[in-house]
Image (cartoon, rainbow, N blue to C red; front, side):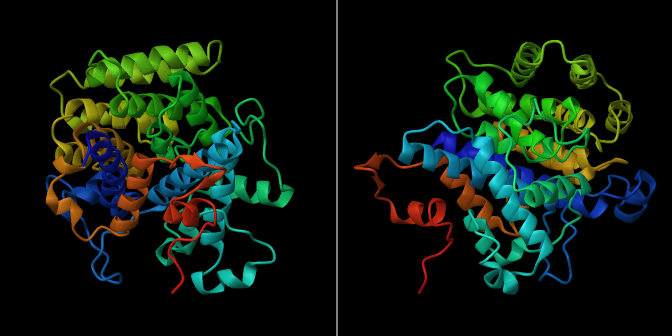
Length: 384
């Protein structure tokens, strides 16, 4: 396994670990978490007894996977056509597939052929047809886009709503897992992917920050950077991209606070309370940055701290898992997290496709049959 593949696997799988760890306590207050799981809170999967004892992922990981699928669809079609269509176009279409999985059951999908032309191979995965507390903002924005049959050229400049919920940033990590010629392009496209459903600048600017950090981890420059340096660089770059935004200082302040708190000796719970609860994007990012900096060499500690608080535990866990998982790599994630995680093989398959990237086009064709099946024909497995 190459270093890049290990890091990309770590990012996607690590995010799913944090998501699955935090999902059972997402709507619990601190007192109930510690009363239920003990003085250290939830520290291991709480498996679902109705799903063969699996640790269930939430809508966070579902949407991460669909983001990745859309990103690879864009890469594939642009390679075939010789175009530069922005990834957001294909990601929005992928999110429409995710919307279908939330509104129907797997067995009925074939009956929708007249009204729905799927564009992702993920739409062939039965386990994704589960509602795991999907965000109302995401659902409503995507329903409206489906009703209007509309795709915007620029979701940042033409906001779909005024939401700054964390549903945009929690799914943005794949945007950092494909190399861009200019990291600013990656950051802006990360913001665009979030803005498909979250139109407030504090809903999409944190996605640009996360994209930048993941991009620097997986595709570093010649000079090695610390995680803190990556975060500061991401902050400076977002200042340039979104200069003049009325809410930029709010984001910068919470990033700076997360960095400062990670270097003090106060309790993690006290520090996280100062950052918020994570229901909105800048707070979710701030909590994840704090946990990632404080425990950057200990994946288990990072994700555990990131979910044991009053707020949106699965999202803060997912973002923390994305960052520390990418930083350490899949090979450094404890084996205990690799057992009984729902859709683990699908998550790793998508990660490996991101690491591989679209095969070269020869004579207007991609010779890799498996790649064509998944990213052109939108079919998961070959028909027997």
